[in-house]
Image: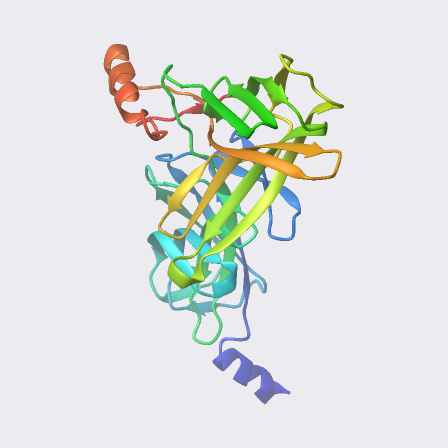
Length: 339
């Protein structure tokens, strides 16, 4: 028995430790709900691009009085994308390491401070049908045979700012000599708590329509070349009318986005995936035939932007220029709006 324990000690099994990662501002930092792969929602500490991530790594020895030999203690900040069809192959777009202790031994429990200053976090945290983008801290005590490590996930939100220029969507659709409708949505870019306001105008109705709705469709595209996967998910169904419209009738639309699980539009994230949103206008006639027209909209996350580096006028001018085609993250992003 004595020999057995001596051997365990020799191979480093005699002592073990628990690791804890504690953020410095854990008491005051806002948390955000985020869906995990199994569909469960948990709350995680919320960070923005450019914010410092700092805290302590506590290494607590399990058996007081026994020493713990190690090959070094480190902490990493990682941003990675995992495609579910390519499990185990993680694409890291952020990878930072801080060494906390050189190889040696611990004779008692110890805390180590760490700080990753103004960390770039270019993309929003995302858990989808075929892909996951996550950020986490990983503390590791290196051992000869089995490392001891602990991960702490965080959530990142990307804030955008749009100019006042936000053109409406106006379209005419029709089936020759049967149906002719015109529809209009007030904007083409909506923040996640926005309201889609619009109207549908019937110019010609010669088929018997019994039902009409607007769907919000989320399309997730992963992979490249021959390995492209599309997942369409209907996020919302909004009934516009039940019953037959008449010529000249105009039907208003008010669709509140705040109640739905939406993310910002993501285009070609790290050349790995995209998430796009579409408004799908669906008409169903009495013979159950479906007619539809799809239109892409851009969703973005609104923030109270505090710009420190530019004058107000310069900021507005640059916003106009930057945002004409894409939402741009602002240089300094502070607080996310709740309204």
